Length: 102
Image 1 (spheres, one colour):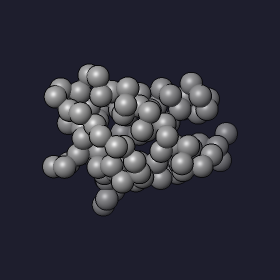
Image 2: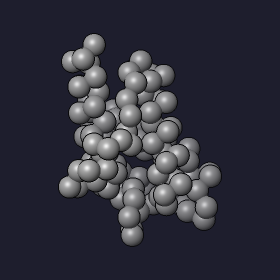
Image 3: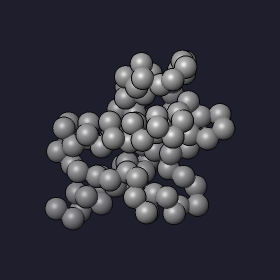
Image 4: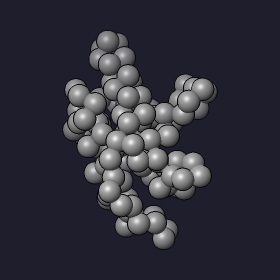
């Protein structure tokens, strides 16, 4: 699994969520798109929706079950939910760990 593939999952999910995001228009999504925070494209409900969408998409397409919003994610010094790239790196880390535990 490559980081670019995961970034594409995230970007596709963001595009699908745009329809339900209140008043947000997401332009030119890429790996440096800020997801959450003062300049982020998502509010807290949008972030929760993105997390649920990604967990489901990863399970459906890769047959791997991961939890993105857990104590580990929330306790990191730098949030994995900052940008598309940081979230993709975090997802890859979780996928690798899940495969090792199979």
